[in-house]
Image (cartoon, rainbow, N blue to C red; front, side, top):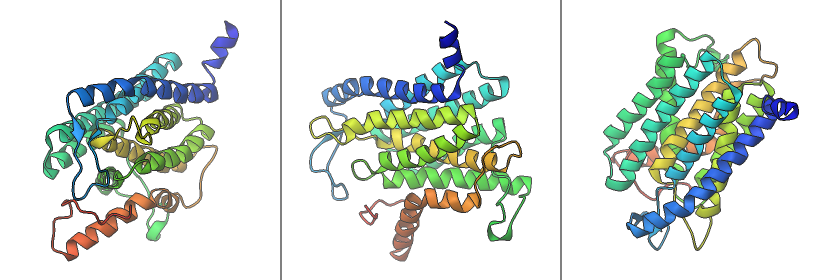
Length: 300
């Protein structure tokens, strides 16, 4: 009994446990989702700008969101988070819930870009104002250090919206969005674990486990599944959440492990979706089209 108690107070064991739990939950949910989607014909149709040639089940985000939510709540109960971390957890769950249902509605009946942007702003506001999670400094990038409060808040909103939509835009071929989220979360998981930040560590490892479960089906020939906007919007938000958490923790004096030139490192980690978004928006602007008008000009 003592050994078990010791294990469930060890951050390294809990990190691995959260990853395994998320993988098992997501893996067990996807067959049900695929069956339901096929039965109700909630399929992604082939089209001029699609690379798949036959109807494919979507709403893979349902499994990702369920695995993330249940695993995070379970870890919060087991570990007994302090009041501050509990508020952070509840704010994060509220924000991801907004984006999940926003994406699911877009998958089913389509939403206008304005409504999607509004939902993203509301979700970002939850974590920015309830937990004061914002980028406080550029760490010398472009010769800029500490940021004024108002600019810090506005810039954090910008980062959330940019990363969410950049990640959403790269979800165009099998495995791409999932693989990028694995690489990004894998880097952050090590950083947060070394600094013993429990909540952020759990978030990173749960994403890894949930996405691994999703990729089993996304890369399958016979049981293929797309994550859809229900998955890409809330996953993009979580990547931004980890990135901002990385910058904040790197500036904290009590951090035992820090990275030099953290803003540049973060840009490098997120370079693929950011460069793809910049390229696509530039090409659309040259053709005098809306930057939100879909096409086949993505890198993938």
